[in-house]
Length: 181
Image (cartoon, rainbow, N blue to C red; front, top):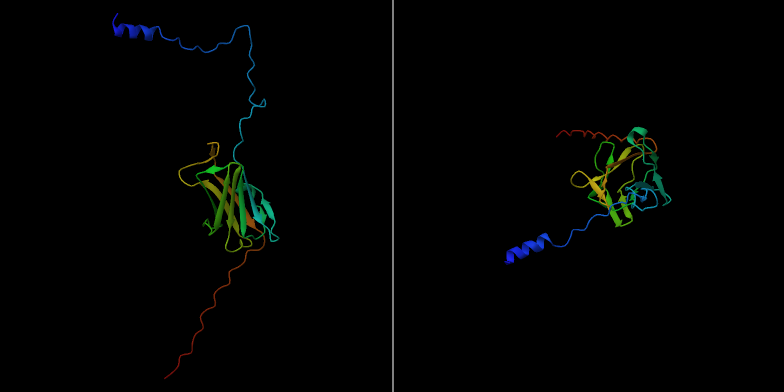
């Protein structure tokens, strides 16, 4: 026999393919229920928002949609966002009631257990004004959690308690008396 014929015979008669196990018609196997104690990993990422009180404590801001109304908070210089899972491709911004991004000094502490994002403001949030904290994708259309799942954008509206401060109108320039020479 030639080498080609021997090689072809070896390929044809080679090792049998492993067969998939089939269930015996007389034996029933129990499939585990999805919620029967099998750990499917952590659930989707969830968020909390807190603000610093005047006495250095922290108070939670309820997470409600804009249609439910805005929770009231005290004026604050610091906001903290926490997530239950680490995030990828995210950004966190604070907007004023005119939808302008606020000037802030931010720090992020990331760990496998989640994210702590601290927003420090140069001046306290203004009484009576409305703000919205937005968590969305830095680039592209979506951010993901540490499990690789897409996380929807989050908008957290709130309002600072108290009356809205009216801006003080600037003083008109004084007219100088004209000197006659």
